[in-house]
Length: 417
Ligand code: UD1
Image (cartoon, rainbow, N blue to C red; front, side):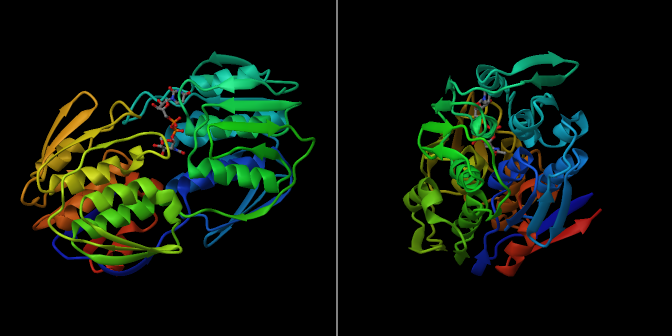
C-alpha cells in the first residue's frame, strides 16, 4: 500500500493547473446511460472514483475507452440494469446510475450504499423522488429494486438539498412524460454542469443553480461531446496549501465564481488573493488570523473543504469554531491532527480550535477523502517528517496531488510499502 512522505516547512511557489471535477464527472458519465450512442468526455480526472464509474458502466454493457483525460463511452449495447454491491461499496456515488437506468431500461437494481466514515448518508430523498415520478421501489437483500413502465413528471420537494439526489432526479425526469419541478434542489456548480450536458443532449432543464429546477420531459436524447468543469475542491485545497506555507502560487484553469465562499474565508484569514479570469493567485501573509466557519449547502462554505480549513485554523493566531452542518461524523481527521500537535476539541457538530505555534510531523492515517488531503496539508507545514498512510482515500478524489505539490517546491513523495 502506498504512503505519502512529506518533509514540512517549504513555502510553495509557482503555477499549478487544476483538473476536471470528480463530482461533476461522475453524474455526467452516468448520464451516458440515458441514450444509446458514443459520448466523448474531455478533461476527466484520472481518479479511483472515475475508474469505479467506468467499470460500473462497462459491467452494464457499455464500451468504455480512455485516452489521457478523454473518456469515450458507447452505450448503444447497454443491456444490464444492475449496480452490484462490489461497485457501490467502493463508491457511494454509484447510486447515480439509478435515475438514468430507470429512464432507459425501465428497471434498475442498485445496491444500497451503506453509511460511510463521515456519516449515515441515507438515500431516502432519491427514492422518494423516484416514487413520485411513478417508480415502484422495493428494498430487498440490501438492494434497491426499481421498476417503472412509464415515468411521469411531478413536483418534488427535497427536505434537504441533496446533490446526488437532485442529479438522479434530473436524469430520471429528462425523458419523463410532462414536467417535473424540483424544489429545494441543490445549487452546486456540478448540478449546473449536469444540466448543461443534459440540455446539450436535447433535454429541457431550466433553473439549475437555483433551488427550483424545472425539467420538461423530451421524447429523445442524443450523445454529446463535452468537457468537465474544473474541480473547485482541488483548487480550494491548493489555495489552503499556499496560505499555510506562506507561499505564492498561481492556480490555473479554475473557475473563481465557484470558489467565492472559499476566497471570502481565506481573505478573512489575511491571505492575499488576486483573480485574473481563470487564474487565482494566492499569497500567504503570516500570521494567519483565526476565523469561524459553518459548512452549508452551496453557495455556503463546502463541507468538502472543512478538514483543509481546520488545518489552517490549527496554526492560526487565536481561537476558531468550525460547525459541520452537512455530515454528522466529519471530524475523523481531528484525532490525527491532534497527534501532530493541534489543539482541537469536539463537541457535537462543533470543533473548537486553539491555534498553536506549529505542528510536528508524525505517522498518520487517512480515514476519508478530504481527511487525507488535510493530513497532507498538515505535513506541509509541520516540522520534520509526516507519513500519511491509507492514501487510497486520496486517490479517490485527487489526481497526483503529491506531484502537483512537489512541482510547487514541496518536499513530498509517494512510496510503496
Ligand atoms: C455530494 C458530494 C460530496 C459532498 C456532498 C455535500 C458527489 C459525488 N458527492 O454527496 O462530495 O460532500 O455532496 O456537498 O457529488 N441526505 C439525506 N437523504 C438523502 C440524501 C441526502 O438525508 O436521500 C442528507 C445527507 O445525509 C447529508 C445531506 O443530505 O446530511 C447532504 O447530502 P448530499 O448532498 O446528498 O451528499 P451526496 O450527494 O452524497
